[in-house]
Length: 220
Figure 1 (cartoon, rainbow, N blue to C red):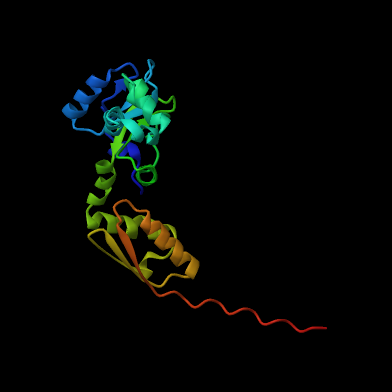
Figure 2 (tube, rainbow, N blue to C red):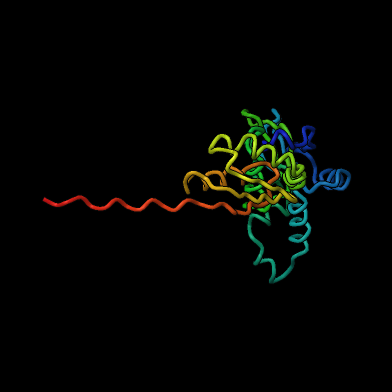
């Protein structure tokens, strides 16, 4: 069974309003030791994210002078003169839903190079925060627990479990046995890779030979 975001997210996230001043944002980043905050509208809807990187842009661009000023992107120039979270924030925010998988959260973080994702409900209101540390927590699952899920739930849904031997060490699954067909074996491997806590799968299956094509019939 795959972990979902609500299983690992922080349910009491810190946030700021669009009108929160830059000085307060900087102080809260230091106090909470986080890299950024969701920015909320008056009704609690997530409208953006303000991060330490946004504040660094303000400092860096304000210190740019002379011929280097022409190299600054207009968007960064606008952020440099901003005084509130609404001025500095990146919008729209990349968000995720509580019932999305942790795998999907990891993919979003990797694709967008993010450290944290706001978790929003169906109305777009803040429900939590999931961080890279939260995502990596799924790999703390005990090896025996992983093995029991594979042998007791995953394989029986697809094949005869007595035909397989499963070993799990440090999250790495070694799978041996003889599936009925190559396609069934490939699907077993695919589902095992999706089990929470699996780091990698070593394919040691003995696949049956592919069926020979039927001989052509006689021509008349």
